[in-house]
Length: 115
Length: 112
Image (cartoon, rainbow over all chains, first blue to last red; front, side):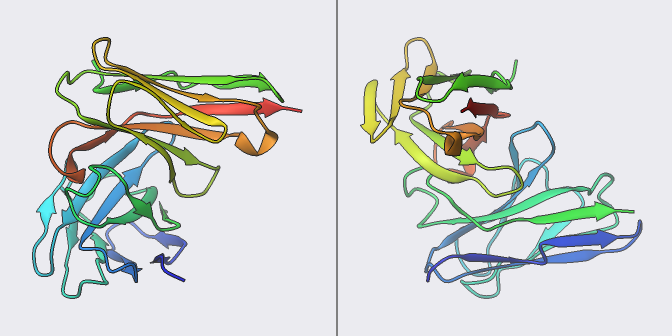
């Protein structure tokens, strides 16, 4: 079955630690995205990537980093520079940036809690 | 002013009735509009997209778009308890999917 796999589903981190969230897709989609969702708020774009070895900052990139070494994979690192990292993180993909303009497929999400 | 605005609810509707969810947006040049459903603790899933003025129907769901009023709505007919979820309105403010802006969502509860 095609889809997007995120891991881990739940993650606890101490302040000052970096953590990496995994995102893998087998939909053969070119574009991948990372969003952050806080309670009662909409999704906010952290980073996105159109093609391998290229990615762009979204609206709230500070304190985060990404890589896109393979088409299938788009991991997100939450660094210690992120002031308020506790949130629900969602990885998504689409055929391309232009495809549909908003028809995204989401992974199941990773819930990060900073202790 | 928020770019995409929704009433956060909760909106309670009796089973079998019509649920009406509303969304307004600020960018008059927006071209594509989407409704996502998100169950509690889960990820969003796309249920409707609409690109031109008027109505678009898909089963029990109808999306309505009025670009002049900068207003998009989602109607759910014959509401079922399984429709209880948060509904996110998303508007593409020009260009690719990286320009997608989400509203904060409306929490809908269908009462048996």
